[in-house]
Length: 100
Image (tube, rainbow, N blue to C red):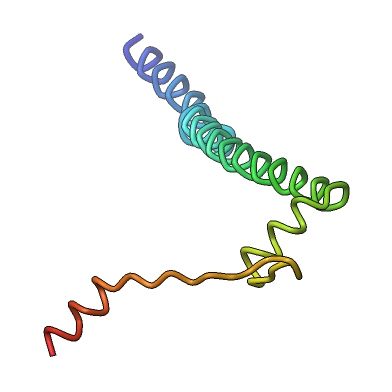
């Protein structure tokens, strides 16, 4: 009788092995769930970035204000009737000259 009980315990343990350590084990499922959650966060960030870029593209297609702003900021362009003033910070230049 003891041999039969021992044999049954061994068979139950062998039957449990794939559940805990096999290809479709609980541990594997939990690991994949964590990977899916991390990928969803990444996808959400990318979706937000795409939404912002899409709005900027639509704004550039429809509005001249956005094009003018980009031309001013990135290319340094001004209109014909404007005068450009560049203000220099004398404190930084003066302090560097005093140190020399």
